[in-house]
Image (cartoon, rainbow, N blue to C red):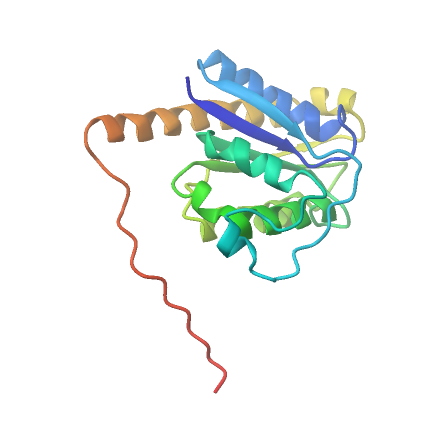
Length: 208
């Protein structure tokens, strides 16, 4: 059974972001997929320091938080949903530190696996936050999963989010579209369609 990992980037384990992710997870399960919510929680996550030690180890050199735990789970996952609350029209700092280190350490784990970003806000800042998260997918060769509107919910507390009927519908759409994309990828593999063959990476420095 295909498995989707959903990351709750909010410090509130059962708050608005979690409520949105639960709606996605319910749609995934209705489509016959396994869904697991990974909680980042309240503990701080240190920033990436650009040491590139992960290139040798295949994991982050720091063992003080959830980064390497998530990478191991991600190896067996077929798709991802990253959810964040909006802080000053931007994703929460913790999830950005988390994703910087996760994608720097193991971007190959995510290649060709679908990803979706979900933003939760009382009022505004959602599209800007989604734009930031989506860039992690596009640098790692991940198909981006959308719905019938931007992937966002609104509300100050979980009860508000549940009353955002359009937002809840959008979340269910993410789940259904994710399931469809995962099944299409599996069908392609079964038909002998392999992943694209990448070129050797070129890094251009424009400073002379």
